[in-house]
Length: 107
Image (cartoon, rainbow, N blue to C red; front, side):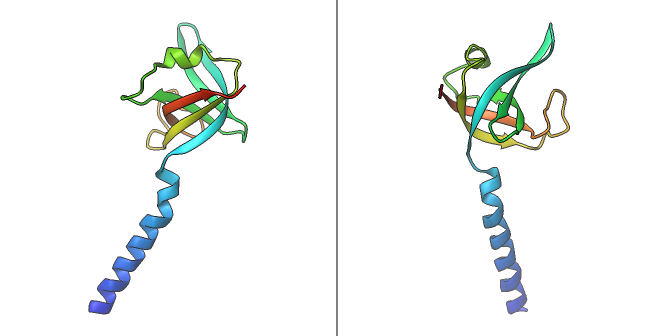
């Protein structure tokens, strides 16, 4: 019984450790895209690897989504997390929603 509990605990810890990189902070590079038609538009991001994300700004960020859309046409590096919980949500692109905590202009 004790060996079974230890085995199950080891499997759970290893599963949690292997899943960590998928849910941790991520850095992506690419360009801003505006989707939809006025007045119903939303901001997306196309990475240099071909990923498509809908953009959201973290609640504690020192900038707004408007600050980011003003950088359209420039290559940006975004840091944040991928929210895959809303993968099938309204105005969500194929790779999920990227919640931005920091951004810099690369080009």
